[in-house]
Image (cartoon, rainbow over all chains, first blue to last red; front, side, top):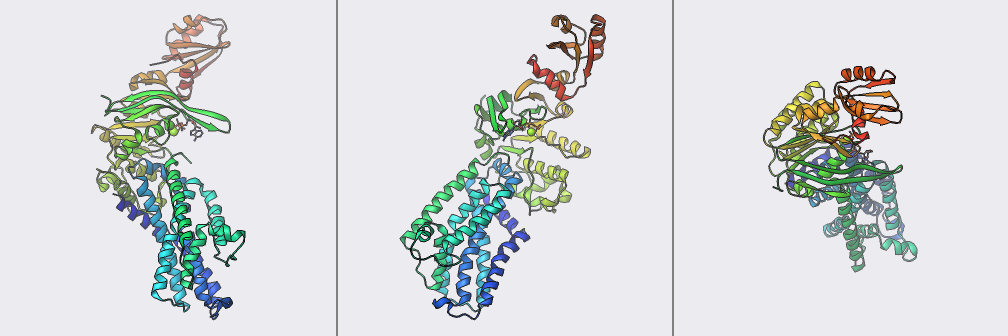
Length: 244
Length: 303
Ligand SMILES: Nc1ncnc2c1ncn2[C@@H]1O[C@H](COP(=O)(O)OP(=O)(O)OP(=O)(O)O)[C@@H](O)[C@H]1O
Ligand SMILES: [Mg+2]
């Protein structure tokens, strides 16, 4: 019975044109600006990497993370409409509800990634298929904690609060995760960064740049965040039955 | 039989607010037999929606118990036995009316046919319109369709006719009654005595978080349809006042007396004949609000 529900949720997401264009358009424009201006740079900062490749990878993890978290804004809007109470007087199981929200988040994340991969290809980025698959797979796994975080914030915050929270949260997570510039190998930022899921998401992207995949440390951090945030999201949904 | 009908026992709910605790519901006992249609009638803030929230499992009572067909509310909801139209709520956007009703129908084990439901709720003409483009009354009709499409054993409606025009109201009640006639249980909240009178088997009158009267519509109508006479009249005995023709009950507030009257014309004549010194005489109309104040101020009335 929840298959039909999921289908309608996906349909709704794709029909929200403004949301779609802004979510997909922002990382794309960003990429075209940054990578377009340094298109000819074949060896960015002695890294041996071309600028279009380097920025594509950075923006893919950033864009996928924001797309995932944006489910929080949609949930907050639905709560504002009182839909969280209406859905609670139907037999929809909480798990099916959360699954639908996670999958709509993944739909947005995948679209964002596809757009950026296409833009990268247009700028001359080419990767061996194995690399590309490994990066994509790892990114998808790395998005799990962000799916939970988006749902959690959506059920905790009002429509007014969720905008700044997501905007600031994405910027902070991206900064500490080393999206914009590499975090040095030692010092406080490095220690803090390695405890955050965004750091490992960025590392997942770096697989395409010849970086190492996650070691035990990375898998552990991601697993802990996924479980903790997943439980919190479930709890937040379960207790979210009041008028807002 | 414990499994049949709905039972609310000793229900209380207090909210905290910046001005201090709000005792929204204070000790409600009520049973609704399976197949019965019951109106919750009361003024703003009486606790109707809070009671409904507890009946639906949306709010946890501070004290007391709720049983819906012998089950906890959440279990009855999970089994698909409950359909509800809440007081506040808009529709989610980016689906058309038919899709939204079909989406809700898909969550229930034995829903009604979607097109049939749209017709019953008078929204077949707007079936293809996006939910964010609807008028207030159209939205209300779609919300009714969402509650109805589940074909529930218990239908809960919180002020369902708000925003509906005259024809919309008539059609709404007709559909509701046809539904109830199939042996279904219906609980609805309203401010309007006429709605409760016309469409319920029983009326439960609420004020200030309590049930102040519970009985057949005619009985409640007699109680609430009354007028009150207020006058400054120090020293008059309450017994004698209460025995005047047309007076149901008499009460004193300082120097003033308050008479709840079934027949205020007879009462005012008798009052002035017996007590010509009565001054500042006021007769208040049959507004629910005043009637509730009269009924609840002294706790005198328990039907
Ligand atoms: N979440 C809340 N926090 C604080 N007070 C609340 C909350 N919800 C309801 N109340 C208060 O509880 C009281 C009862 O509210 P309720 O909504 O049950 O009344 P009602 O009978 O449905 O009124 P109306 O006819 O206006 O819909 C009101 O005084 C209301 O302000
Ligand atoms: Mg109400």
